Amino acid sequence: MIDVTVRDEVAVITLARPAKLNALTAAMRADLAAAVREHGSSGHGSSGHGRSGRGIVVTGTGRAFSAGEDLHEATGRSLVTEVELFHDMTRAVLESEVPVVAAVNGLAVGGAAEWTLCFDARLGVPSAGYFFPENHLGLSISNAASLLLPRLTGGGRALRLVLGSARLNAADALDAGLLDEIVPPEELVDAAVAQVRRWSEPGAATAAHLALLRPSLAEVERAFAAETEAAVRVEASGLAQAGMARFTAAHPQTGES
Image (cartoon, rainbow, N blue to C red):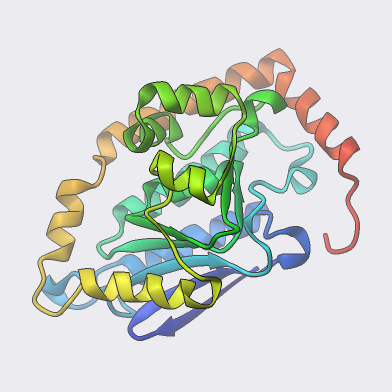
């Protein structure tokens, strides 16, 4: 349940499941990776512009950016499969040849919060926030967060955020380096689109600099492998199943599936 539109030569990918706080089903995660690949691949020679133009913005609808993995929908599936779907979303962003910017319109949780760590910028509204609940749910982090979170926040702070299952408001996220700017809600997507356009003016060597300045895919793949192994361990221990059962019991599924 995602929508894709093009605004001023920028593809705007919108998570469109507001009744479930844009919680990500397996199909949505696959669709997000595919949409990023479609609009992030170079279609205009050496300009580095994607097929829709100059870059990608990802945002949500309603009061959340995304509640992360839909744990109700994931019940019964392997945690490793779930983690690897998230990994491919991050891989798609880092392979793209255009700037990718998050327009964080509300709370970003778990795997969705971790996905934004690989983006080239993260703009948020005053009600935005980040929540990393995995440790206390018996789950493991994904999206190469083991590499990318310390890169943004510093290693010691990243450890405290993960072990403490931290919830940060917009000001805290800005201070931690998880948001780059806080803007009024009515300006959020326009500001993100404008950021993409500033970075990808005609004649700019944007694709070359993205390749130079983003984390290397080789080190990201090593982080993916380590995180997959962590998922194997917590699943084998029973921690993941118990944590998901606690969550689904405390949050009964109602309405839209």
